[in-house]
Length: 197
Length: 197
DNA sequence: TTTTGTAAACAACAAGCGTTGACTATTAAA
DNA sequence: TTTAATAGTCAACGCTTGTTGTTTACAAAA
Image (cartoon, rainbow over all chains, first blue to last red; front, side):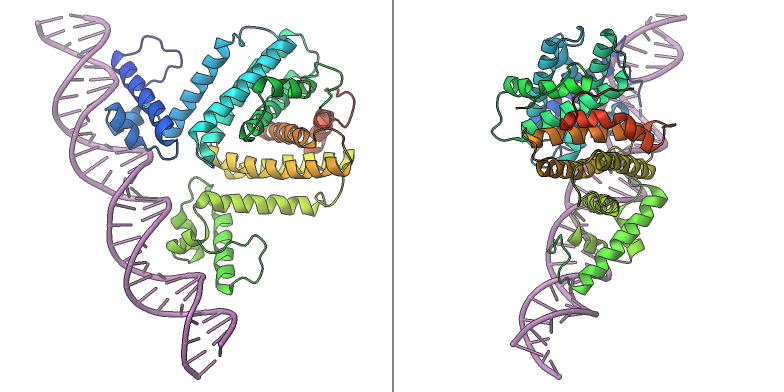
């Protein structure tokens, strides 16, 4: 396994090229055939890279997906400048919408029960939500156990977003966000009493 | 795939025998080698059953695990007569303890990052928690959206249990249950104001 | 430019997976 | 007891996976 620098600092141009080719091929195949149906061979053929080279960069196709998901969700959050800011009700609302839309979009790539795909998305997204919420709570100078609150809130949020996205005729993400906002807030202890419609 | 009756009603004795053998072999191997290291061949050799027969009963080893988990968690709940009763703070506390202990015990079978194993446990356990909580809420005649509340609570509960079980020197399950009880209750809207230590 | 490290290509490997078709054994009903 | 249905066995298949050893190509330093 070649050196995998998370921050892409001074990277051998060959490495950069190969990774880009693999990522592009993967993204395309994901849209075409879905995750389960895509083999490592498919990816390397499309990328015009040797199969052994793939394994020099990623342990398996799951690791590749993991990296893709993490990157694209992070981008989504940065686009909405979520990571930089602090806790407000409006920021939380924006986060909920972001998660809902991201999950909904992800699930287009997986036919019915591509279990492993969904599990990977879940892990990556949840982790980033949790980190963000913990940051918010600490910035807000919360007196209670911020870690525990962030865990509960991130799981609850992801679960609700997942369910919403699997509801075939779901409301607009913005409306749903309004509905579940007090519920998430109660996990963060940011309001005294949640009221669910 | 042979007929898979969830309730074991009038089942060909050969089928019964084969399934039992497979389940037993699987359970043993899980304890010995962990899930990832166990192959279908291992299972069928141990069970003294042809490999093709395995595929007549389960699509793959993941489906087998799924069935095992569902069954054993259900048993665990029944042992504590959780499924039969209604919502009380004490029952919720017992549920939390049950989940914590089950997750902790499950994770003994998976070395470090057996990701797929954990994901399967998560799905099965969460689903059953959710069903139970929804039942409790409806029995209690809740006026709000019980489905949404049950989803949030089950995800939050599982997430907290998971984190607790991965904390290498965690407190006793009973103590932890006491700590997070108000948090879970707030998702179920069963108390006005959670206070986290 | 030459040298040196290292990425990528290539070919071959053992292993596991999931499926198939022909044959045998068991079950439950006529 | 005979018979029809079906569960199980067996051997083989094509395919994907992850790995390895060798050779070639290239990037950055001397």
